[in-house]
Length: 298
Image 1 (cartoon, rainbow, N blue to C red):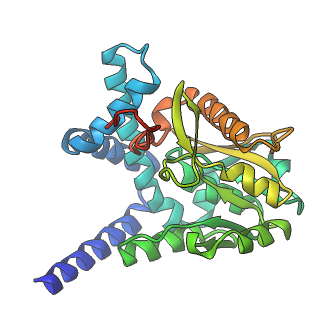
Image 2: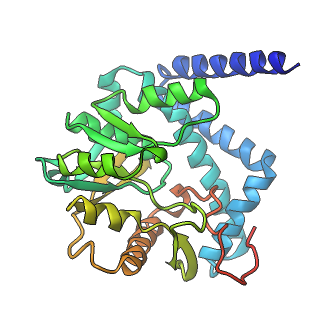
Image 3: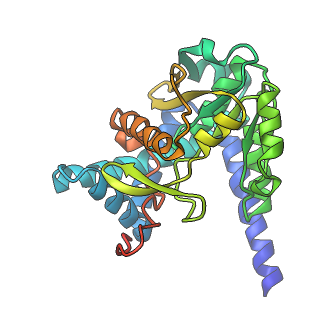
């Protein structure tokens, strides 16, 4: 029975990847229309994750009317689904098509040269477009920390997609800090996505939308160890594809206070989210880890 389930799982995975390869040549408006339908379906069918999104929005935007919050939740699922289907053309369409649809804008000069750089890439739905935009702009070797997927076929597909443009080295969490810092000091930008709840270990509680939120101070730590500047990269899904904005490097960061640095990171992140709240990754249980004595949120 286990072998039969494994075979079925592999077949479904291969079929799904093949469908994404076919979808890569569809006109973008049609792909986005499929995303609307898929998003509405997920919103209606995946009740547990819908409740996570709604609770996150309730905690972060308490002043919103219930109807507005429900609309924001539905739009979150639509953007999530559209971004997922966009991987089809990001990872399989001709390079020229990707260049037309993904624009790198803002302080692009921050990515030039060989100065040690930590790129703060928050979990907006367009984060895969951000990889592509930066890699298409610069052939500079870069690194990131990657968590293996349980489905090995999906894992291979994601790795090929994210490494499609340019040179991206992937370190596992088991590799430790030393090789990452070494690469950073050698001038290889480090893409860091620290805005998730990684549990109580190594986390500090700092404000996020006014709530004490478990936050890993890794952005400050790597910037300090690598003697690197921090440059935010903020992707925005648009009707024509994505605008990936490079923001100016933060000044006076890091400091000697990692807790204050983590609070500053969350404050910046909150400001980015407020410009496009439906495009943030609210499906994640961001407030799962609570301070001692506080009741669970979900």
